[in-house]
Length: 338
Image 1 (cartoon, rainbow, N blue to C red):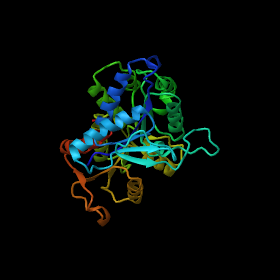
Image 2 (tube, rainbow, N blue to C red; image 1 turned 180 degrees about the vertical axis):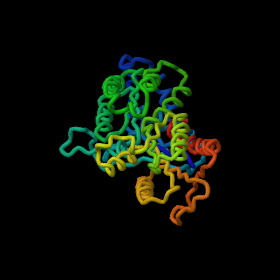
Image 3 (spheres, one colour; image 1 turned 60 degrees about the vertical axis):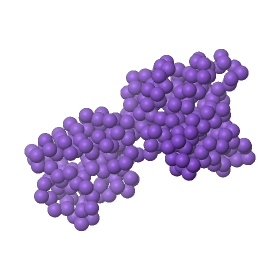
Image 4 (cartoon, rainbow, N blue to C red; image 1 turned 90 degrees about the vertical axis):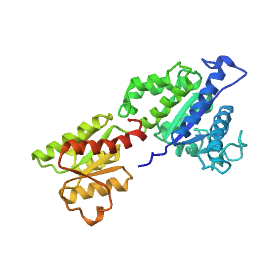
């Protein structure tokens, strides 16, 4: 399994003429922004910027210097910047794309989130002014997680105050409040360590800890042991493995299954018993692009449709857990839970 590439937007800015606008020196903000941009690429992700502020220029330049050093003069498009239609970009680092929108103001006649927000998976805010506030509002409307650094001051600090109030509603299903605060309120000057922690938080905040388990509802000993094994392994990586029969049974079961599959970090499906509901749920998960781990009792004859999919066979649950843990660890690595 390859690491999942996520698109991380860094937005914000600074005013060198007004050093008091931030809580820390501008040089600190720039140094961290540059290291964060490099770390995003080192972790196999893509960097998005707005190509409008000096901070955009600094972080895109640092990122492209790393890319060119590793990949030469024809690198993959991993540093992507957007600029409003009709505006001149502040830099020429990486790929520059003209927005379909001439105005990114959120108060327009027919408000549409700019591409740099729509195509991002998570939005990181550093310092900033009015434009940074617009980015935060667009991110909320687009339901994109926001990681605003309070420790550098500026608009991002104000946004942090709002996001902190929304924590239980928006972020608590993916991360713990302490994780959130340790990164976004950090006063550390170890930029490399802080950048690694930030990227890890970004990976984690876009995923849920829920794992949806598709398996027989039979209460035989072997299925109880299988389910217990799956739960033990998932718990090691801060995942909660649940079957639909443990949810609120007052709800209609099919919509509840669909909801849990959609919200899951990944799916574990046992195909020992070739039941229609198992393959229906498995197909739905695959159609959504979810990572799926297939399991089956040793000796199970698999249907033709899934014979080309790797399956973890179980008989000895000690050996099964060892193999399952390898798969879950791979998924956990790119979801920030390794």
